[in-house]
Structures are given as structure tokens and as C-alpha cells.
Image (cartoon, rainbow, N blue to C red; front, side, top):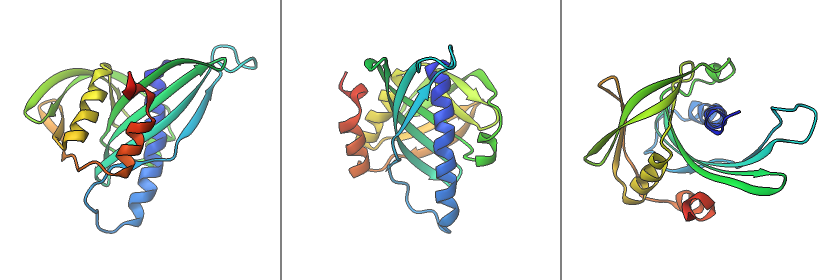
Length: 189
């Protein structure tokens, strides 16, 4: 299983929690950074029944501009045989946090889109989950750019097919944002 596909799956799991949280609130508050519960994912895919292939410790920091959209920064620490193999900072743009879609089989396509941070717009390739409307960029540097935009409080927009699908002025850093920043080894590289 590729790490990007694992991230797309994990982003989907986070959306299940997100939908449950948003159904309770009647009026959407001003979006804030939210640190979600960390999780461990054991992957035993290439040789079922033997040793675990790798273990990924995953932390998610999300901001939800509306009840059905989110930008999620994910910090993954991957260990194989107890040894640190990789740390990654990823970002995902989720345009439909519909929990029903996450229970179905993934359908991934490669697409292009644009991200505007402040006044600068750049094109990127994405893995798009057709059923969940989650977009994960192929360029891992975009995650750091989104993180830095969060530090500055910039506007971030996701543009696909000429239409702005999501736009948000990122809020000030809060305790959840600072905790994520301190605990993510990928931000220290």
C-alpha cells in the first residue's frame, strides 16, 4: 500500500469523526484549528500472516470552513521493525465529509488543480478520491506551504476546473496548532 493511498484512507477516517461533530452543532462557529485523536495504523499487506510491514503513527490537524469541507494537515511517522523509516507532513482538501462514502470502496484518479496561498497561485497534481471528494497533492512541499500559511494566517483557496471549491482565511494559531507543530518530526527536518 502506498503511503499516499494510506493518507487518503486515513483522511477519510478523520472525516467520519468530523461529520459526527458537525451534526451536533446547529450554527457553524468560526473555524478553528482542531487536533484530532492520534492513531496507530498497522499495515500487513504484502505478506499477510507474518510480521507487520510497517506501523504508522498519525496525527491530524484540521480546519473546517463549512460543515462539509476541511483542510487537514497530517503528520505520519512510519516505523518498520521498530526502526524509524520515514516522517511525512501531508495535506488533504476534503470537499465532502460524507461518512457514507468512506464506507465504500476507494476510487482514486490523478487530476490537476490549483492552490492559492495569499496572492500566489500554483498548479499541482492530486490524487482525487472520486467517492469522497478528497484531494491529496502529489507534491509533499504543499503541506509545508499550507502549514506556513497557517502560521501567517493567510487565505488559502483550492481551485479545480476553474472553480474555487474552497476558500478560507486561516485563523490565528491556537493551542492545537502549536501542539501539532511541536510534536510533528516532519516539521523539524
